[in-house]
Image (tube, rainbow, N blue to C red; front, side, top):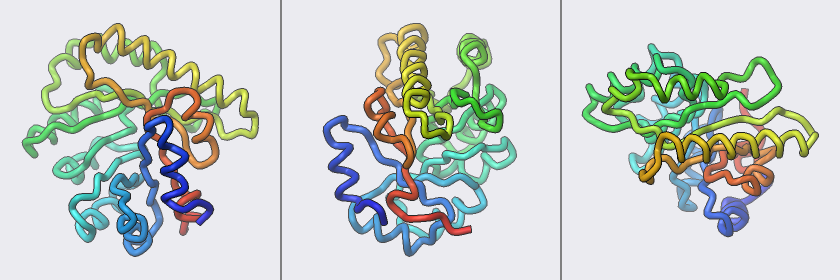
Length: 221
């Protein structure tokens, strides 16, 4: 490991930023090393990897779905998922609402924004976000709670560009909070920052960082 969990949490403490340990491709045994040190929030990209881990591992783990989520996979995680970070369409929100209703629970979600230059990244642009939040179908949702926004910066060594993208996302977060969630404390999470840029994200207002390789080492293929 490049960092111990204790070292990492000490770095986050001054800003009260939450840590989601990205455990994709890592084994339950590796996850338990951090679990035994007190870490409870873990992030997975793929439903087919997440479900077996949930079945096998301690039930007080808070699982975060952080990868692109297809609507036909929602039903497999609706009964236990703690938070879905990667909601990028009203259609997906409606499917989560439907499956959460069947499971008799409320599922917290983050709306994923496209802030990077790479075309391969998923996410909404500003106008798509506003259209979603203004849609009557959004107001009709009963079993999802939009807790905030998520975004991934361009993978580059240009820290000024990364900072600019995070800052723009923070500005949009504040705009949306004021415009659509005034008087509510539910819209409070800004999930941005990974192993390569978490320090910049924290400086730009992130409330939640998603860090894998710094804690677990290189991914397993």
